[in-house]
Image (cartoon, rainbow, N blue to C red; front, side, top):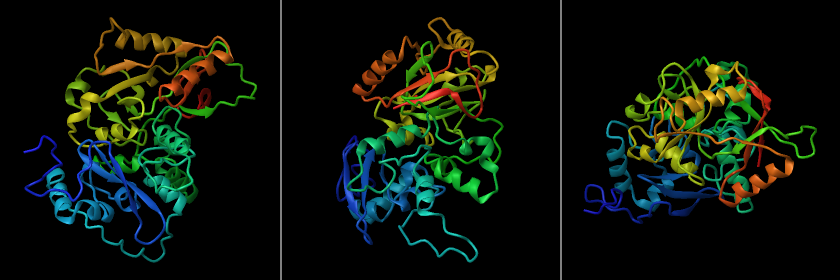
Length: 371
């Protein structure tokens, strides 16, 4: 039997076997839209709405009519049974008509909600239908702003999730792509007693003098809040890291950071951290950039505490956790030089922290993003 578990399942082979990371296009059956099908680790995904909107199904146990056409119905049934033996197989059926009195979600808001845990202005290229004229750079930027400390709207901060106004709900829907998957495959929390620090955009021609500020690479990972017991998305939905990892973390503090598999691996990271019992967690590093439970202390003191916990001789030092490196800015040109260096390596940008600033559970001018 092949070492590739997706090459053949119960004697059934796919019509076309994609190698890990390989993608192909699938044309919409009813419009000129072109979708992307891609093999990522132990599953396939399609960025069509049907694939994204499968509540209750883990990301490695979803299908759609495009995947079924490309891989075959029999193969897809076998794959879904293998990955989610107690779940229902998806047949790519048409959705039932909306009940009377309910307004359909706006196409823009719904599309953004469906695009897997993000919150920036642009769309995730990997999570929305491909437009022939779209800049791939812009699409990639969207994906990475999803879960980083620069999440782009504090309406989607955990405390706000219970807002009942239509405007608030639409805003939340527009700004949390990946968390569509959060409440699909690992359950969800209705009330979350925390909110995270969110960034403003840096204005090159603005009045802020960033000399003396701290800068760090803007990571394209999945934003994660550790509450002393578990890892949670910023909308309050739990991740399922190995128990061995949780056992290595301190129980008397909260941590804010990114689950990160490397530059350019956002989709792979999402696939791993949102799949129950994924064997690929060993590829994930918890990149910690703050300690909210010590938020009343200046930023520099919070970094010292993190060093005491996870630094070279820290009390909880382990290979699975790293502290995001902070560099003091000499002048504006220094920051742009680092930005250019980060982008040349496939990074997304840099984050700027005001010296002496406190941790605020809201959008703040003390944290700026540059990309």
